[in-house]
Image: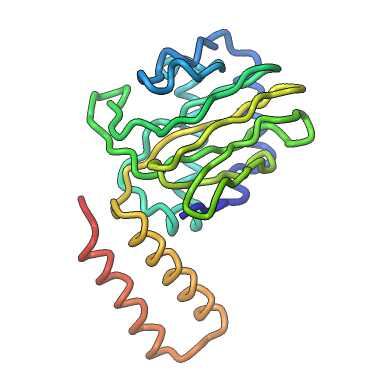
Length: 227
């Protein structure tokens, strides 16, 4: 399931992030965190994830994520890997790859299963050409290029790539989530059910029916969740 999550960051948060990232001297070769599959096809830069600027920017992003109802509903996060930040200049790209299944938390060494991948766009699409996130699933290839502050989440099992930049610079935040619900099909069903419940709440539909649906939703989460 691929879901676009709008307005994760507001204008003030975007300005704060971009100012910190643009003046940072902690940019390094992005291949330092790539696995054996990704390293040969990864050509970008990223912020050292243990640097002070990374920690400050992580706090901004995680705080916004924890308050965003669509992110919570679609992802059902258990553990969020500390957000990372990358940039692509002209000629840079990231070839087709699948994200590693397990990552070590950079701060405490915990193992984190990557159920969901996320890309939060920090550059307006008019400021660069190319750089689309291209995600492949059973319905074909999806080209994603969102407004600054918007995010896309998709199964980490997906084959994906970042198209070459032909003009400008693309800056983004990316991270992974270990969900309470490992299986993407089950997550999709729960997201659709929760979305329907929210719409019914807005229309003041039959209270007894809504209460029954809410109970079914939570009982399914209780049955399927892994904590």
